Length: 138
Image (tube, rainbow, N blue to C red; front, side, top):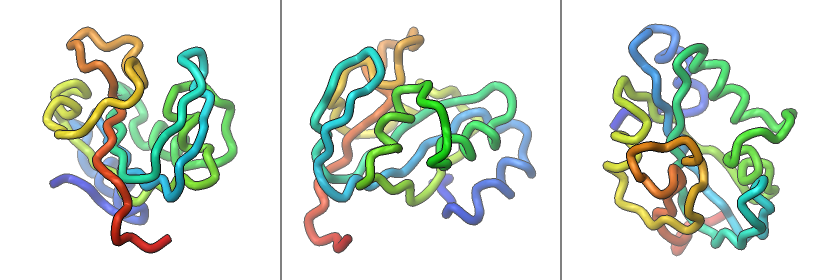
């Protein structure tokens, strides 16, 4: 597993120029109704999520932007990350393509097209729901 805590990931990006894909490990502590750009308004259930994205240039800047609460909402993931119950817990980094990394994840697609409006590999979504929060304290 190539996931690091929020204090460690940036050192890994700076040390390896081959890294082009990131995965955000997300906890949504309670269900949230979120309007996701032009997709729709959607009720995301509480639980664990994994979002896969890429940046051909400035990967560290892209991830830092996603982790920030001060930003203009641009990408689908921005809308979910701004929800009050959302927390990014770790960042995965990879040299493989975004779609290849995403397709290895066994998770449920809840909102078709999320983060995948330019996907040519037919991923369906680049956000996957991994399961509920049973046994996890807020």
